[in-house]
Image 1 (tube, rainbow, N blue to C red):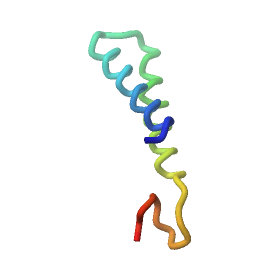
Image 2: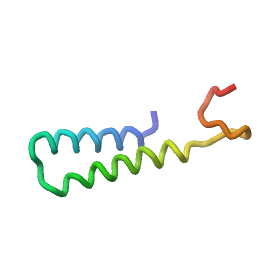
Image 3: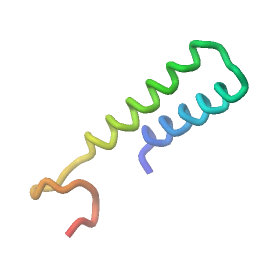
Length: 58
């Protein structure tokens, strides 16, 4: 798995725990940053010549 996807999942997990226990208001930036990184990394994956993403695509 990609390190950026792991980082974004960790940020979302920290955000979820922080909101569950009534964390400070700045913790919501983790939601924004985590979703941004997740979407950015999925969209910018390398594609082959046929335009399909990922490894092992036939």
